Structures are given as C-alpha cells and as structure tokens.
Image (cartoon, rainbow, N blue to C red; front, top):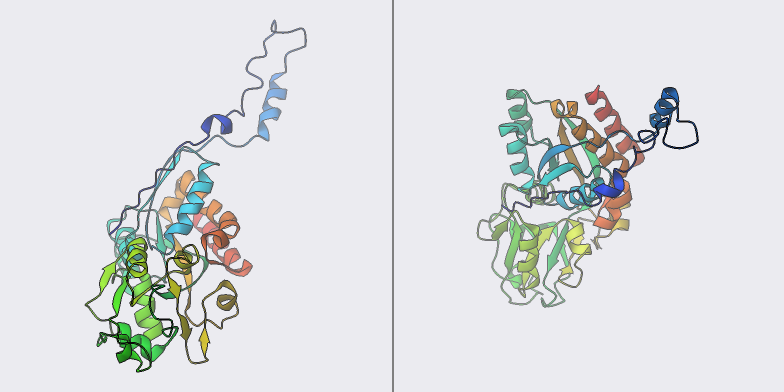
Length: 331
C-alpha cells in the first residue's frame, strides 16, 4: 500500500489573510479626518470573506480518484491554507475499510460504488454517508512501447486469457497471430476498485490469475509496464494520458469493434470500458465547518480541474444531484 500523505500547508497565508485591517487603527486623534463610527465599521466587514478555517481532513481510497482529489486539495490550499488535507491511497476497498471500519477518515475516494457488505459495515458502526459522483474514467489497458505492434487491440475473451483465472503465459497463446513473447502483468491488487471493475464488469469472471505483479500504487504499475517488453497492465485514463511516452494504450473491442480510449470515445459511449468515479463523505463529519466547506468546494471546482487531471467531467445533472445530497446532509 502506498501512503501518499499530503500536508496542504499555508502556501500564501500572509497574502490571503490581510483582509480585516481597516477600522482598528482609526482613533479619535489618529488623523484630521473623523474616525469611522461603530455602525460603519460593522457594515464594512459584513461583506468580507469569513475568517479562515483550520483543522485536518483525512482521506483514503482509490488510486484512480486520488490524483483528482490531490489536485483539488492544492486548489483548496489557496482558499483555506490552514486546513491540512492528508491524502492516502490504499485502493477503493482499503479506503472503505477505514471509512466504514475504523471510522478515521472523513472522505473515501472510490473508482466503484460502495459494495453492500461495505455499506453494511458502515451501518453496523453507525456511519451514515453521502455518495458524490465526481466524474467518469476510461479504464485503460496498456503495454510497453517495445511490445510488438501487432498486439494492438484486445477483445473480452482475450482479456480473460490474459488476466482471467486460467491466464496464459505468452502472447501467442492469447492469439496465434501474436508473437511468442512472455506476458508480464502489472496490475492493481484485489483492494482496488480498478481490479474489481476489470474482473467483475469487463471480464465478468470469478477472480483473476494470481501470478501477477499486484500493487495498489499506479506509479509502480506504470513503471513495471513501461520497462518490460511484452507487458500488460491497466489503470485509470489519467495515468495514461499524462504519460503517453511511457506506454502504448491498447484498443478494446467490447463487441462492436476496436476503439481507443479517449475523452471523446468515453463521452460518446463507443469505448466500452468506462466507469463512474466517486467520493464518499461521512455525514457526521459534515458538522465540522472545514469538512463541509471542502465538500462544497470539491463540487463547485471539480469540473474546472478534472480535464487537466485526465478524466471526463460529470454532467451538470450528476453534480446538481450530488450538491443537493451534500446540502441535505449538512442540514
């Protein structure tokens, strides 16, 4: 498990906290001009920004959603520099273990919806939560740039041959037109929502092969794939689009022909390996001003940054529904 702990510090606190300096220096003998009255002082501060928030927020979960939340935490630091956001990455399942089990996180990133057994654990521990749809991902299958280019597109049956419970050893065992080159697999571990999506939604099988290089850290997966000719791996679209020189994306044939992953093909539905991205927030934590403020900020800002991170924005309707749910939970 990778623990990526972000401490979002006061990057520009002095510049951001200069606001409330006007009326305190005015005394009766300070200058020839009359001092402001008490009522004038009050009205002059009514339109100013509220005092800065402080505190810490714990977030864990999906390595896919992690970069998006990380980018928003950086944006939030410019607004509330004294709120410290600690972001860890242990996979969607690992995040829910903390969120619903130990209860020591306020937000949980997830590249899949919460499972029934995870929701039951939350209920058992008295944890109510709100689901926030934050965008869409195109799960991307990749190989090394040095893998023979004839390996260019995979079908669902070929994916099962590669990553299913009875996975084969060489590319020509997947497709006789492909070379006799060993398949080295670097992929998410079983705590990952990306793993669940591949196995349950795309391949629709009971589990995967066990003899692969498993990690909750997409950076480790990326390094393994890029440095190994004949490799195979998969992760969120953002890790591909931000590192296109490091690996080659495979097209996917979900039954209607080979389609490359892209923002456009994910939006129009022709790329058949897309999935929703979520953030979950504990309702009791929303009573804390900094948690409620970050949740609101997330929804108000996510579509401004999600494209730069490498994902597809949620629709206006999806964001409106999430915003209404958060506002209802805040009360």
